[in-house]
Image (tube, rainbow, N blue to C red):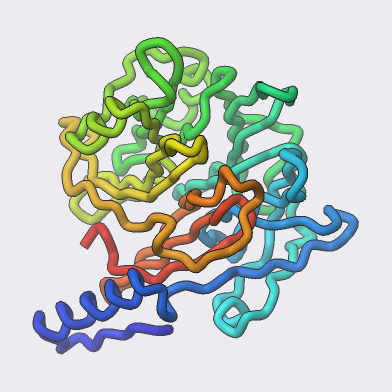
Length: 329
């Protein structure tokens, strides 16, 4: 499905476009595509690819994993929108490194470099796992080295994201958990620059609580939340794409995707929106039954015609694209 808007399109036509997109989005009609990947047996046999990043530098990175295991590899695939639209499989980029034992990949692009990271599984036991967020830095995709970690988060902290601001300072999202932080709450900090990141992540100094009525209510109900991507917006604010998680009465996990705008100078957060949940995608087999209601955002691409494309992992077994109205317009 492709939506185009001519320069002379008026507000009436624009509203009609958005209503049609929202209708198709919620009805699941042509607004989504399953992204298929060709995983060579030398990488992993009989594997799923889920929790993909949004495309960047001509690639998309997916979490490659078997249904009966939590051992993952983050693999770079050449991204071709036409292949996805035609139902063909994406091939790996052989000139990019494979990141062993790395879950839920993410990235941020900057003027002269990129940051790439994920959740490194340190140890796994039957009832518990030890993990940390690790971040790599390079001039381009092919310069990323799995053996050269730029910055590491504390043990047990996921959803660390970094975005350089216009004045070379940077905003860092944090998600501590345990004690006063509960199952995981969103905090952030503004630092002088990217080079301060390795030292910044060793502690939780000068973090600010990201408060909205919806997040506060969610935490009070026993839920958790995290940031998946941050984007610089035209008005100087930061666009946040994140997830809300909670346990259902059945014991299963339920995840939905939200967006909001954050002013990094004042801390004001506005325009909280739920943009995807399990009802936004068709039924597909989950990795496990307790993951049947999980959608996990990897990132968002904004278009000039007022639309956007959201990249999701679904039920820990599939990758999906959703065409939606740009939540930051």
